[in-house]
Length: 462
Image (cartoon, rainbow, N blue to C red):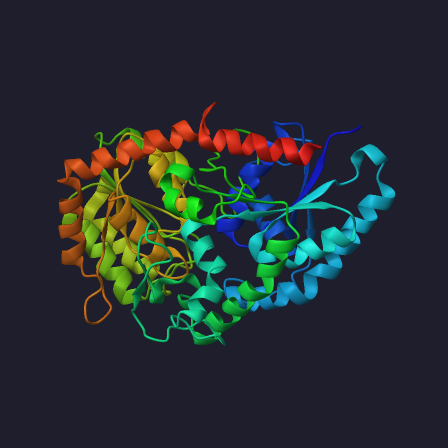
């Protein structure tokens, strides 16, 4: 009998590809062969971002791609449109690949299972039809997962509308159980998309996917850890759902990291020159954007702090005046700040010079900050980020919320004040360090995530 062969299918977005790639590496270390299936568009981005000689250095991970159904100039950051297209175009192409592999590869090399992002749940029917075992990958929090599981209850209790998931009473606070922290209906991730139509599409996708997850998949593996969300995992109360996180790549040399942009590693040398616990690290993930007024206010706020900062500014983070705005800032502050288009984030957060993390609160960034004991300045933008902020600030108490004013602006004065408040709070830092220890212990031998991962691997190897 050959090695077990898993097909891995992410939702085609940076925050979903990255942790699934780490799962691929972990599975390879336990004897699996992996075929990682991207869209044509993201396949090209992934390969272009890999360092020379990285591609195919691990023969146990094979990269292939299929069409996403969009035209070259279409906006692939519009998640709702992307999800609609994926559900109609990709199933046929995935099935063609599976059939080809099942018929043309030697018996010992044929795929044995498919692990797909929960948002790609249509793939489980394709896999089942072709005799493959299945598992779902959940790259977000157990809190968000639990809210999805409880859509029927939220409708029954009069919290949300049945047709689109919108709030019946905006801003209402509810609890799924006495143990689970309160949630704001406005923060349910399907209510925090780009617009009301996108909210409706995402809500429809959730309901379409729910039955496949419930009835077909053998496991749901989550990029979280039990101790971080104990009430949620206890509430779910099933051995089918396994927290195996945090999934941290640590930027393994010579192995694909699942990034769409090449990281600017010159920032590591700059960090080496800074004092311990002095640098504000600012990064808003792969999709969040701000308008030029807010961008300028953020730049001025960082300048006002008088502290060193490392700021990740993607080319599409704001409007076209970005170059002039940054040039003026750099002229005024000299070497006190550094701006890069993309950073090796896990290495940055692990650096002793970093004092805090101004973040959009995407779940990957949340897990990376937690795993390095770095307190947060929370600036959520959309999707699950507002709920993640609630856990960072109100449940774990390892961060502060940035509060928009009446013009929906976070002012330069608030930025300065929040930085000072956070860095003056020694107890906040102590809680962040304590949570780091719990997170790391969980993935070490004997830890909860370590044991859950072994349970998953043992079951899927059979």
